[in-house]
Image (cartoon, rainbow, N blue to C red):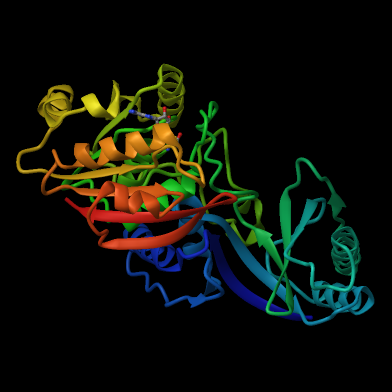
Length: 391
Ligand SMILES: C[S@@+](CC[C@H](N)C(=O)[O-])C[C@H]1O[C@@H](n2cnc3c(N)ncnc32)[C@H](O)[C@@H]1O
């Protein structure tokens, strides 16, 4: 085992560039004079930076496109449990970085460890024993609490190397806490944020329209992202605040771009989805920022949009349509008609950008035209494509 000291952001495969850009923007705004180093990319969905508490704080507090922020502490090339235990226990006995304290509770989660010569539960048990025994040598008593732990430990194997990290948020960050009702096929919140970044959504110049908004994830994330709102609140706090290494850190609840005034219209044909959207927007604190319209996309003409937005519509605005239409792996009758109609509907918005997340590239032909960007992305277990058109 060896001590390492990295800040790792984990996100959706294919989004390293987007995650890098978002962290630089946030850090430059949050920390005066900070120099954000170029991260090492590990695979297609992980960034590795030298560990820095200020950068870590910004990432956990505000970063919307990643799903986890880890502090990588140890790594080992051991392939069996005994050497893993010996190495880890000895490293922890000699480690005085501020991620442990007497009386702290731990929970341990292992992922991607299939290449190890032992099962996941045995690996978790070994890491747990090594942590508890190693810390005991320094007079620190730790206990396990699988449900309400102070510290979440993440174990994973990448390129044959097992790493042990602290999960600084204490869980998956795409769960923002505002989504109570999810609708039929909700997008993960961080995937919605990725779509906004890939579309180069700029709240200063773009009016954003999601005509098939479902439970509203894209629209809600657009407002939260434009203002760089904190992911946390007094009631919902990230784990890193408990760590001694972050004793000078305070809970970040202020937005970084609080003066942003995004103009966002979210519409759907389904009354139940609209209800979920309202509840979610209320809980996210953005209900007054959204213009919510109940309509069939076919009736959502530029005139209807202008009437609903009223004087929120800025002079000389540009427009971005961003949506994830209903999709199955195979297109069926109703969807084919809908996609045909979407193609025609888009024609009423010359000069706009239109971007969609869809499961099949047949959609591309139906919509007509050639997308300027076409990028494979996974939507949970579904294969999907992001396509952006200039209309
Ligand atoms: C995949 S879901 C969108 C999920 C959404 N992004 C979310 O996070 O909840 C597709 C949505 O398209 C809506 N829809 C289907 N046909 C429509 C139409 N003709 N006009 C407007 N919305 C439609 C459905 O009601 C559904 O909510």
